[in-house]
Image (cartoon, helix red, strand yellow):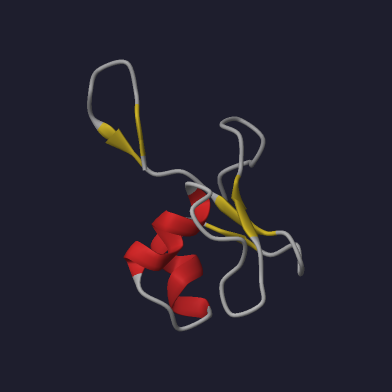
Length: 67
């Protein structure tokens, strides 16, 4: 999650770089590969190269159309 201008937390989308699947949140991405939220957070912050052999990235705001 990232802070917006009003200092409220806003959910950010996460993409699995290997498969191209886009998740609504880091937690959803973590659940999909059976790792903890903190492990996904650390990966997205660049503290580890991959999780269970897969790589993820935050999707820039405004690049995913809300369904």
